[in-house]
Amino acid sequence: ADQPAETPDGNLTVTGNWSYFDRNDVYTGAEEFLVELVRGDNYGHLAYCFTDLGGTYSCGPVTNPGGVGVRTIVHTWSNYNPNPDTLAVVNPDWGTTNAIANTFSAQTGVVAFADGTHDIGAWYVFNDDSYERAYWTQRDINDVWRYILFNGGGGVAGPTTVQWKLSSTDGTYYNPGGNVHMMGVDPLSPLGVVAKHEYGHNVMYNIYGNYMPPNPNCNPHTIQAALSAGCGWTEGWTEFLTSVVNNSPTFYWPSGASLDLEYPTWGTPGWDNGDWPEGRVAGALWDIYDSNNDGDDTYSDGTFVNLWDVSYNANDNVMADFWYHWLVRGHSTVSWGPIMDLYQNTINYRGGPLNDDFNNAQ
Image 1: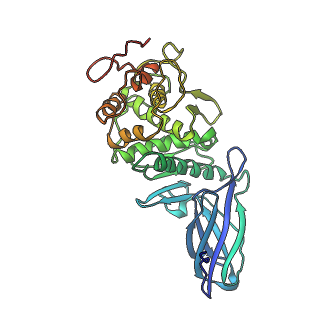
Image 2: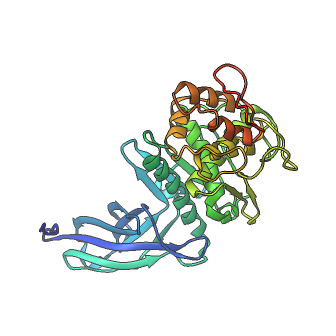
Image 3: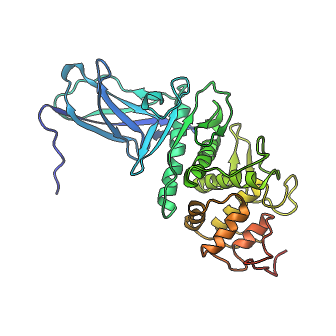
């Protein structure tokens, strides 16, 4: 069997675990967060390392600072190679770039170790800490990035910087080419829907080559209203992405209020029809993906791969662009398939070139 790597004399490697209490008050390992090993006397930097999926880390080896001891610091900062894609949650009072100094952090106590490899123990962000929502948000955006990596079949989501502080009333939005902005209450959204949704806008901008489709009449917007084709696409696509990552087609507000994006169809009260309402776009994309049959939706693509293929490789401005590229990129055209998933969501593309007028449609 392989022998564990040894730490040379005079050197120190520090292991440990960082956790926090999530939005459901469950003790949770800090998944793939940055950890910094520093001197115990003056915070002098010694090494960086990352936690694993359960929050465990190993930093070093470094020259042992001896009696002054060391401590570790966990930051709301992740970096995924090879791009590199940096994902960070920062306090705008400290700075709005993704610099590590602008992130939220928690630290261990100071411990002096002899040379070798030593465990500093399991530490956690205090429950109900005023900054704990930043750790929830970091996990939310990490989950989106990881989902696309492992389920998209190629290409990655790209970087993001989220500005958040507990007292923020700045608004909830993504500034194309800039940062995601979140209000103090936004991380309370169940399943991290708000953070994932706003990062989804940044993902679209990233994969479109630093381009965001025009989305007129979109501020303010609602899920059910027909405001513009561009608004429907840009908002509906990221609602779909969030649903896939969460495996739940439900939009949750920070208050806990929710809206199911799958069940609405023709005649649903309060919902406009067609490809302008963002909820119709989100529902149609979700129905292509999911395996649940409802009404005219009896088709399931089964995976995220084909939906991501179109999104990643074609800069669609509106839902009709997506459908065109779905067809020309060789994805399913069966008469009972995706075209009926769209129809179930009141998006009627059944007539015209390349489209199959399925005669069993209601």
